[in-house]
Amino acid sequence: MKATTPNRLTVLKTYKLFIAGAFPRTESGRYYIATNKKGEQLANMCQGSKKDFRDAVVAARGAFKGWAGRAAFNRGQILYRIAEMLEGRRAQFIEELMQQDATRAEAQREVDLSIDRLVYYAGWCDKFQQIFSSVNPVASAHFNFSVPEPMGVVAAIVPQNDSLLGLVSVMAPVIAGGNTCILLGSESKPLCSITFAEVINSSDVPGGVVNILTGKPSELASIFANHMDVNAVIYCENDTKTQASIKEQAAENVKRVHFYAGKNWYKEDGQSPYFIMDTQEIKTTWHPIENIGGGGSKY
Image (cartoon, rainbow, N blue to C red; front, side, top):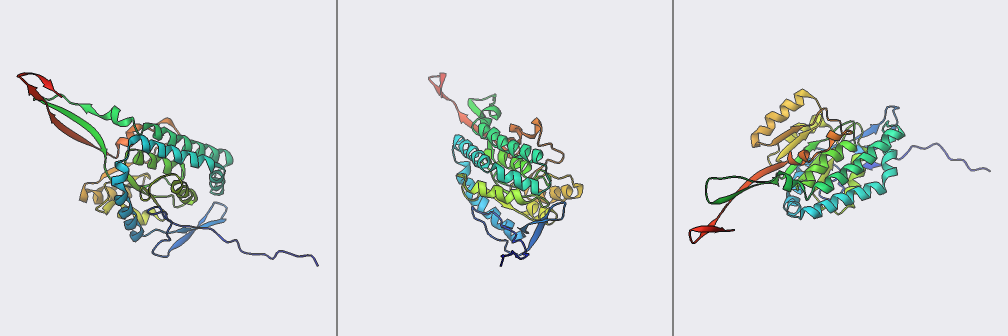
């Protein structure tokens, strides 16, 4: 008798969160099913909560000192390592983007640009301080230096449509500058965000430097903005009501706020060292010049 395979339900993969270098399920137990335009069910996605975000902030704050204290050249090596690992899984990301309604050509372009963008910011890690630092003229016997320093913990709601390239384009300049981050992946196209977390996890990035959540921007935007231990918020959509709410709530602890709505991440202006500077603070240092015998100076 010929064996037959009975009809069966597909077992969907559950994509978990990425917090502190681990992959926990959401503490709320909530999830949603990601689908594409054909109505096909793609995966179970965790619906991140306020508690998940708080855990991610604790992880990011704990990792900040060590990451900011690393040599800039070493941060560049690690960003380049992320690019290497993404290159090695290129076919998987192309397939996921195609599942989420991209054509093969569109998917290939997005993955390739994401890899190139990581290499671009890897190169800037040990150069941007030279470009943006200055020695300032002062009317006293001092040297006066202004240098950029990382702000701390950055929370970002990444672009909803360019689910891989947008996430990489927002994340890379933040961590290149020595900050740590919490990223909320695309709600409608979430697969690549957590698969990218798997790349981060195998790329020498210390736990807590990059944390990735999935869920609803409408629910989490205010939580990103009003958390008192977040130093900057990035919002990449053009919802004016959400933008106004973020500005208002961020003012309570004087967070830096950046809106990247309308950015075309596929063009040259989608990458720039000025994106690194968006999450830097300028520190000015005075250093006395010691006079020797009434003339000359000792440095």
